Image 1 (tube, rainbow, N blue to C red):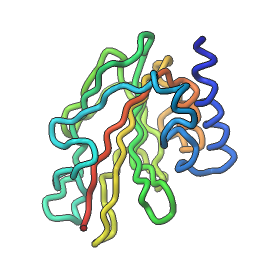
Image 2 (spheres, rainbow, N blue to C red):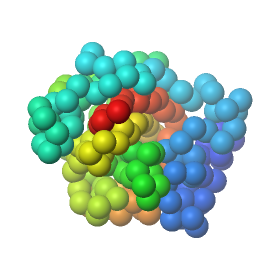
Image 3 (cartoon, helix red, strand yellow):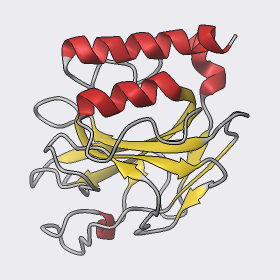
Length: 192
């Protein structure tokens, strides 16, 4: 039963490798087959913003007034049994060149169910962003533009499926291969 549920996700990883993009691969976006994968989704919330609403200014880059570049607090519940760890991928689907990945982190212990603001996590691994840098890149859309920022949390059946500094072409398929569930919250940032 586990292999049947993961087949669409593994196929998505193949599409990622072939297409070289993250926008349409299914890993970052919605499941390709909602009826088959609906049970995989769990709840993600934040005490500082609601899904589809604005991120407070302190979570943006420092070029914006009040921007401190901090990670927002996130909470999740309803994760599947067998979860050994979590990964988080933050992306901007509204970037001019297609989905822009701002953060890839994995190896978050499977017993954790929240991150505090500005969290510094021990024993985790971070993959490279679209800019080929490891670490969190805060929301920073061009002035006058308003973008959506998706924080997708993946429940994994592996403690850490990739090494520190892994390229997107390696980290995203590794996450996809080990995903047993996921949840998402989206915040908006930038001018209107």
